[in-house]
Image (cartoon, rainbow, N blue to C red):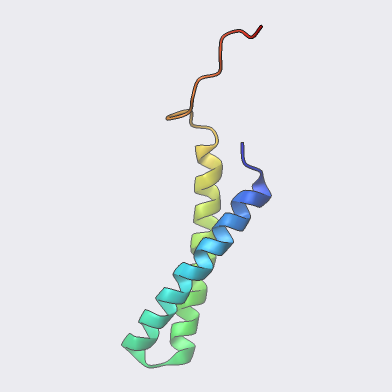
Amino acid sequence: MESHSRSLAKALSYRVCGSAVTGVIAFVLTGKPMVSGGIALADMLSKIVLYFLHERLWEHINFGRAKPPEYEI
């Protein structure tokens, strides 16, 4: 099981990369640094929250996990 802090760290590192790409694309399309920065920031914050909640939800789903043995010696 992953800790809340590990899920959050994964979300942050992934979103920094993804939002940087979004910011560059927004800048290419608009040519305005403030607009593209705002878009990148909104993208980052909303998707960090969504990713964290997604990770925590999947902690409660057993699909694809190995089943523990029914007994141990």
